[in-house]
Image 1 (spheres, rainbow, N blue to C red):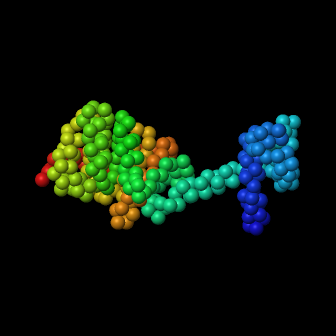
Image 2: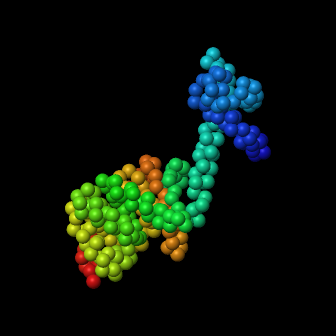
Image 3: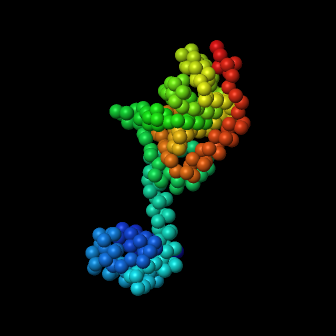
Length: 264
């Protein structure tokens, strides 16, 4: 174990070492090519290449240098570790609020996700991000324990104008909350009557608030008191596949919304 930790430390102490090993795991490179790609000096490259040869991570060829099978294995592991740590740092500020029990996909797929958090000057920033996405979307699908007023209004206006289709499956509590407000009830009725709109209601509570806007998956993150903490959105295919499958599961378990479900 200690030898492995020593090698991890050896790589971690130099970004150039990681870059060189990554490059050589991909293809043959000369020292000049490595210098141009990394910005490292020839002296530095000489030390790095020597250290790598001692570990049998690289070998010399007529094309310069290339990673050995074990060197490529190390490079893959280091790249994976860096990706995991980048993802962790991205999610660290909101990890305590993530509904990870219901997010059954590899969190590494959120490495490049956009995280939007409220601030003193923009307390509604996460919702504003969703509204911006909805404003340009042709297709919106949602499964959620809530349907906030702003999203409802944005979708109703776009579908009413024939510019968007909408499918939504919501917990009964979400529909009940809208039904208790006369203005929101009328807006929901207007949405339900628009072409290209299907809404279903689910008796079981839906533990997430997810909207799929064209190819983007958008997730609202709240704390235990229901206070909005952040939003996450990504176009990563694996997350989209998860969202589509989860939507279909809730959709199949739900029943079509009718006027009796929210009439006063």
